[in-house]
Image (cartoon, rainbow, N blue to C red; front, side, top):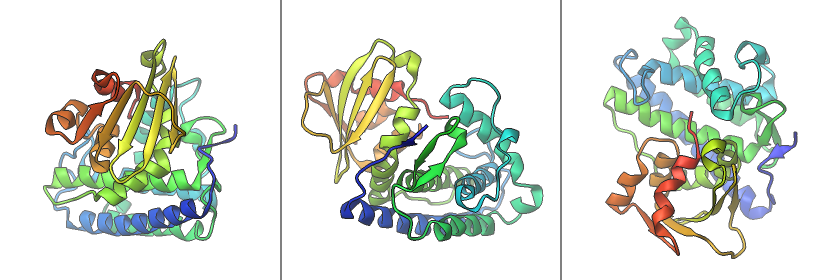
Amino acid sequence: MGTAGRFDAGPEHGTEHERARAALRAAVRRLAGLLGDVADPGAPSGVPPWTVGDVGAHVCAVYVAYGSAFTREFQDWDSVLPAGERTFAERVASVNAKALGLIGEEARTRLGELVLERGDTFLRVTEGLAPDAPVTTPWYGPGVTITLAAATGMMLSETLLHGLDIARGARLPWAIAPDDARLVLGQSMPTMMPFAVDAARARGVRIAFDLAVEGGPRLAVVVDDGTATVTRDAPPRAYDCRITTDPTTFLLIAFRRLPLWKAIVRGAMRPGGRRPWLAPRLSGFFVSP
């Protein structure tokens, strides 16, 4: 299977990729500091049934997984991947559950240090590589690879969103800056949203959404009979529904941290176009394990 999410890695993309790397480096340090301030790792997190400590361990496992595409540190995927044909959501949910066991009790006593160590390892081993360098990601499917740009965006999203989950459980402050959210949306969404389409819900549906993120990027999200394509800065075409949104709001909606209807009521997401009433359906076409 080829690399998903390939794009023209011109100068503007290279610059954005470097910004994403810098944002990830800063977010890793913020997360390490947050974990160091957690008083009770056993407290419920923002993603039940996981505890705050579980979320920190999950982020460490994510860093190990992406880093191992280059370091080969972890290759025993048979121990965590589900057997047989599974949907994207089932594969990721199974891996998430099993991967928690990779972070032992001793390691959990120093999650902040481990997050910093693993995050820095990924950034070090990918230094100087092109944004479209392939990254093996067997947890997304047999033989699946994604670009380094998409992997960096996904690591940034994991860091930002799970930082929020930890902070909510520990009652500590945590903010997701709009510029960081824009980097996640631009670097990873064109690759990850097609993976995450709910084929059953999207079957027989043909809707083209124009997703206009304030300050960029602009994404054409086309749901077409069980599949979805997401194109960044697409050429002009007819759309059924235009959605204008601030970047942080859409990031939270995409990963089920904020209901879409609530964002619309607050005015943080504004439907438009020929059929604006279709806007609330967008999130229902995608799964978030």
